[in-house]
Image 1: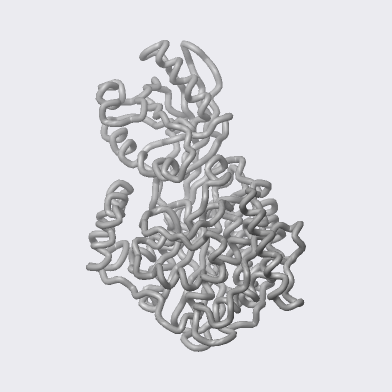
Image 2: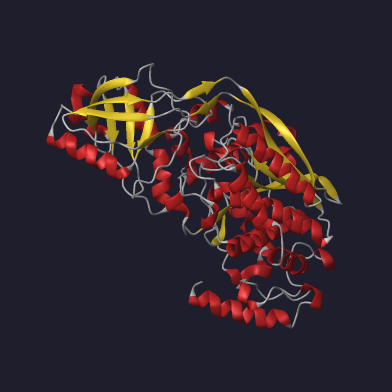
Length: 523
């Protein structure tokens, strides 16, 4: 823990010990929780009266979350016992069962909602054999939802197209046709680098297909031979060309060999991915019904699915467990919010936010009364605030809700709007969305990788996030005043332009669907 945080924790514990009732004492200092002072009665909060204020809700939620809880054991069961859970697999079905059982154990009403995933996918025995002039092993994994290679594989030359920009393709010339392309990458260390891993491929894939390439090998952006898996098909459909991610060091060796023997490096690439038809999948939905305006809804969500090379602990098992724990804590306070809080575990996120898109379509008649959609999807890095999806109008309300936790440094919000997690379709429908902004911590080195396992999760930090998430959901649900309106299509057109979201939609292939109203609020 950082020195400043240690000092703050000590001060908070000293003050808190004199202000909370004996029954709400937090764990001893050795647990190292970063707990703030309780806000003074009557300070700005969720509402204007007594026990419903955010300050009083925080005082009840914090000891429940920071004390003994099922959070860690729930996460262990999901990661170590269920393991990696690709949407459409038996493991995903077991994860849904886990979610339903955990909500029930928390005393929260729960059900599962079905939708149809367009296709199923799993990797076969992916292999790349170098045929000469130099032979060496290349470790690699199929990209998610990549088509299989033809029976018997592909035998072709490998062409190094560098970073595959327009000039790189021009230099490669006619040798691209029928070849396997090697595309370079830089080691990622920031959120911008990770976002770029999704923004680069669509244009490269389109160019490769137009010029007749046989397949693409992406150089890994992690060191030490770490293998991971993304998908470059962002609508739950099989991609346009076979693609695999090669271990960085092996890909660099391949590039050096191509440079030493131009036009002569030949390989046999075999990737027998297994592709099936449509299949029914489920989102898990827990609910605490509001006492005054039950038809108005605040959603706290996270995605339950993951890639399967690791066990999906940082992405996004820890936050699936967070959502359940937040529901348990709110339920255990005995307080009822004015509005209904829904706790949703989405599936299909890794295939292009399929589960949350289907949820939005199924609940279109409710969208005018969804007051906010809150989501966590970035591991356990310290939360600094929320990305508000271009909505400056909701910042004051968020800041008011989080005032009891002001000293955590988590009340610093941004106005960006982007694709990337399950808030996406709610945002395009004009619903206020809050996505937790988090420090990178250990998320990027383990992202989608074989190393994404439970030992990477800082449980103390996860508990802090849970308290923050629970208070956010509670505070918005219990506000006396409205939080933020649903934007009209005209207002969304302005937001999409001003935030740069429109350019993202174009690059990622969503623009036509947005323009036509197939995705997002209809014109």
